[in-house]
Image (cartoon, rainbow, N blue to C red):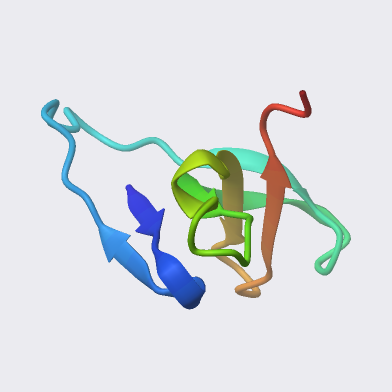
Amino acid sequence: MLLSGEEGTEQEVTMATKNQGFQAVVELCDNCGRETSHEVSVQIRTESKKKENAEFSREPYRVTKCQTCGETNSQRMNNA
């Protein structure tokens, strides 16, 4: 998992559970125009530009990367 820090820096964080195997997620790739295998991850991103609010503005994003063309997309997971 990647954590976004101040000023757009990212830090990799290892989770306590171990991956017992990986199956590619098949999704539609707008760039390829067909369903392809994607690498899917969740990133915690800081949305506030102000340092005093940064710790309160972290939001989870679902990030997908097409394994065929390399196109990367992200979507905010909670739109509260």
